[in-house]
Length: 270
Image (tube, rainbow, N blue to C red; front, side, top):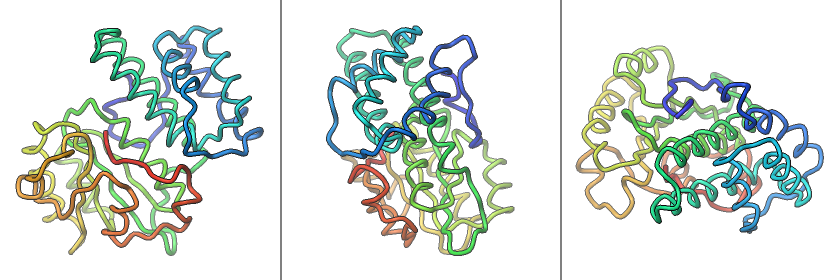
């Protein structure tokens, strides 16, 4: 699944032969210059065009999709926060209805994630130790396939002025080394499946033992939705699917107001 399980923050696009790499590279040039709209109201036709473009990313389809977003004056922020997650949900629904196979959905989702990373380059990476900037460690525990949500949320927090370190499926030793070399104000776990509770609990124990004293740990993701046993089984401090709620609990007030950073609300779902 492409860069789904990478363990650092570097943007990694598909091979140059994949037309989506061209699409991702051009998104900033086209949308940043011409867009002025960041809306929480989704256009279904654009969601469909984006989803279908990721399944069959031929050159003509990519150009049609890019043209549609440009004409609609959709901002990169709206694309990353709203349209890409909606396209992923559309793909998932088609897989559940047996209209797409698992491989098609997996590859298309990896392309959406590559697009999020390409768009996110304009929001900076992970500049640590800047004055007044709160730092967050975002982790997707274990060999998790549901990583798009964590990547989207990471991009939004960076636009809010937070320093965010993203780790997808890190090894235990990597987490320990990271916590010993850096200090974080909060940690967030994006848990895609209930089967990840055991590995998440071990991760939380490491965060407590090696992380900053009193650092709050929050869990979100599809795997915790509707569950009442998450705190007991994982040891996290708080469970929520709402980013603003999570940041409030952690005391990480954004430097840029949440309302100005994109659509009004974004879920922590994976």
